[in-house]
Length: 211
Image (cartoon, rainbow, N blue to C red; front, side, top):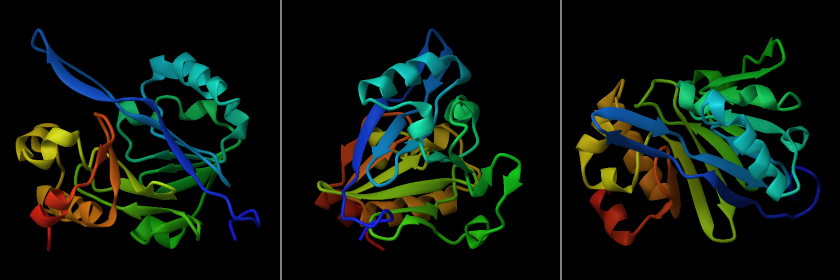
């Protein structure tokens, strides 16, 4: 049974497809923003502070308001991933491995690296340091398979085959990032990266990153 006492499945929808690019020698980037709906409604990575109206408009398309969101998860604390967290005042906030509600901060095993279980059936948050040492990935069981919302652990599909893409985006610990990238590829059926379209994890990818 789900966290609300009945069997329900989760749906994962990308509200905004992230990007990172050079335009006339100027670097432009914004993150992927993802909505999870089901027994719990969750938004992952809330873009820049200039994108609040866009997020509200997209939520309205699904008949949701900020008050309907129970969890806000920021895969890490960079400015393009936390810019509109303040819209969601009824939600518990997870930023990296820090969990809070209003002025209360929860000292849970998750803050020391253990996983955080939101729904024992289908939804958990795990520590995947590398891009930053506090990075996390959200794992969601759906009818399509296991979806990993990975933030900047993966920049975009291209970095599966070209390390320079994610190294060039910055990594506080490349060795840890390599380890956790391989871990997520083995676990997931689909990956939503921090700055590109969702992609399917192929058998070729799993073989390439086999331990």
